[in-house]
Image (cartoon, rainbow, N blue to C red; front, side):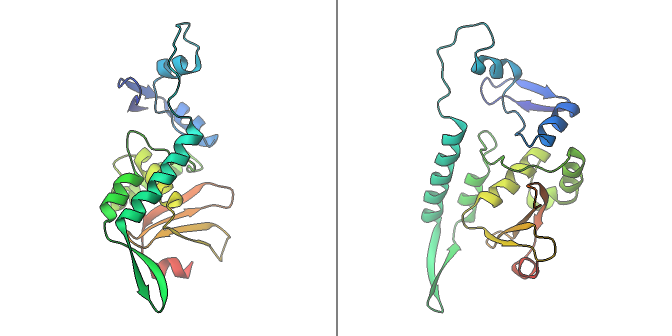
Length: 194
């Protein structure tokens, strides 16, 4: 069982292991709102509410990507090397803080295949990447995948996707059927060998 804080009302709520498994198996995001707030937002509470969601999930993702690009442009300098423009991040802390926003993350596109795999990889690499919980670990992996500065390639051995942020050394492997395989810290040479 896990306990989370509702982003809408601020109250703590619990999800059973079965509920967490259900969301992960279905490829859905773990709820960020308590059951009461979810019912109110769906209009199921029987209580009239004129409150409409401020921004739809799809528009929130678009706004997040646009905001990320703006932040990247502010925090990135363009250097000339061998006549090619390359990006080098001068203020990775600003970018990292934007990439993972505990209260309002919109990077929940990918999950691990099972909660057991998530737990195993979090225990192995969570502290390495600075994640304080399994949910933060998944959000941070999605932030790497969705980061426009991330290098991307297809793994030669099994065709999985590999995402690598050279500025932080973060690397994420995504299976061909769309599940996160692992997320940890590495280096460019390792990414290149994949």
